[in-house]
Image (cartoon, rainbow, N blue to C red; front, side, top):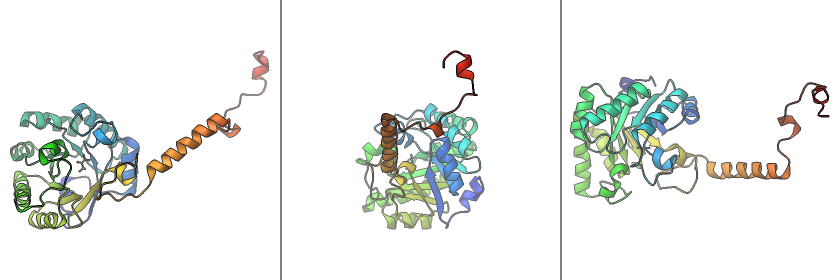
Length: 272
Ligand code: KIV
């Protein structure tokens, strides 16, 4: 897929592949694997930085990690999350977008919730915005925790209305997180922009997964909607244990891992 918003929008009705990446090697591997888009999500907070949730993530941190991901994936469409409360006013959201787009090299920003006026203002200023509805981790506490959203009539109606309002405000795509499949499918059929699901079934225009969930690192988090493609946590732990055993047993480094002096140097220095 070409690295622009128009190409992304044209994927409506297709199968968009999106994955998170927060650093150079992961973004590079994702690009080499041919994903359509990379998200530098604020899941950075819990997945990489060890915070309890996404709320402590600072703009500075997302800028730093987005720039690293961009260096790893120069050809791939890159979306960066606006961290918690950095979109509390249009002015703040514009400042955050400026840094993410101009300094860090993102192609678009994503923000959580039905912040219609902020989205409208950003889009009017020329910022490509991806929306995010359903479970919005920055405000999970107001939603009753990390749980499926839009199950009952009232919740489903609100989600559909919010999706239509965000579309009217100008988002070019919409993430639907932890939403019942039938509702996600119905929203997808009613909005003209692509929907990207996570825990929203197979009826959306694309899927996004958190990279560390997909590869099982560290391995203790596996919600229902995650499919694991690698038991990476187990493999990495085993590799690190083998390394520790080798060092302790004197098996590493072996001669093939070491460098040699030119002949006679030790003697000439009087060290022989
Ligand atoms: O922060 C993130 O990784 C996200 C995805 C789960 C959509 O917002």
